[in-house]
Amino acid sequence: YVDMVCVHCGDKTKVSNSRRQHKGNQVWRRRQCLQCGAVFSTTESVQYELAWAVRRGNRLGPFQRDKLFLSLHRSCQHRKSALSDAKSLTETVIHKLRGRVTKGTLDSSDIALVAQVALNRFDKAASVHYQAFHKG
Image 1: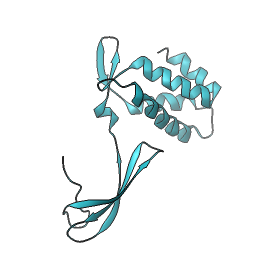
Image 2: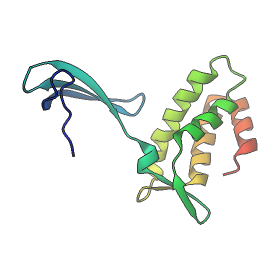
Image 3: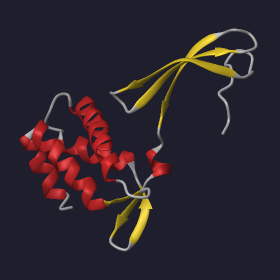
């Protein structure tokens, strides 16, 4: 464990305020340097690629956030707001997947199912496109 250091002088900091950000699965923190007194903010997020493994049959591999994003983006390509929609959907799916992780492991079918449900609620055409390529 390493303390956050001051972006101005490199000394230790303390957290003076902290809030969970519901959008983006992040934590916002206000920090103050113990040495120079500088105040600045940080945003922390989990690196799911390092925290989760995905089981595909008998194999384990790392969770790939980018792969999830790209599959959701492809499914939403008919929408003018495909990029921002895929970004939000990715965050939603990841948030829902957290409850399905067991000892740091997810089944690939769980990812497909959670993504399918999210898309079905969001856009039926995107859901049909996703389902054609992801059987779960």
